[in-house]
Length: 152
Image 1 (tube, rainbow, N blue to C red):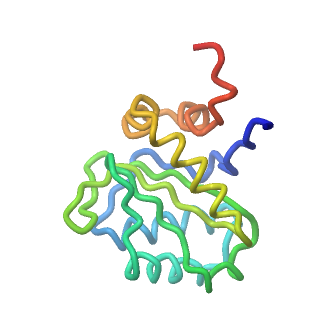
Image 2: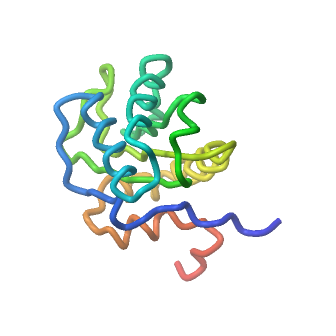
C-alpha cells in the first residue's frame, strides 16, 4: 500500500497563538483560515457551526476537528486543512480544547482527512507536540504521514 498523501495544509492556514471567546468563535476562526486560503465559500462557516450543533467535533486530548455538514460540501472549492492553536484553551462544551484542526473537503475527501488525522492524534507524542508547538514548520512536519518520519 502506498504511503498516504500529505494533508492539504497551506502554511497560511496555521495560526499558533489564537484566542477565542467560545467554541463557536473558535469554529468561525477555523472557517476564516480556510476562507483565507481559498478553500471554501464563506457560507461553509455556517455549515461548520451547524455540524457542531448536531454532533460535537471534539475528539479528545484537547483537540477538536470542526468541519461542515454534508450539505456544505458544495461550498468547498478544494480540500484543505487548517490548524489553530489556542494556548489559553477554549471551553468546548465543558472540555478544554487547545488545538482545532478545521477540515474542508469535496466529495468523500473528509473521510481520508479524518482517517489521516486520527492516525496522527492516536500517537500521544505527536498529539502532544501538536498541542505544544509554536512553530509552523513543526506543525507541517507533524501532519506529514508517518512513512516520511524515518530519521527519528
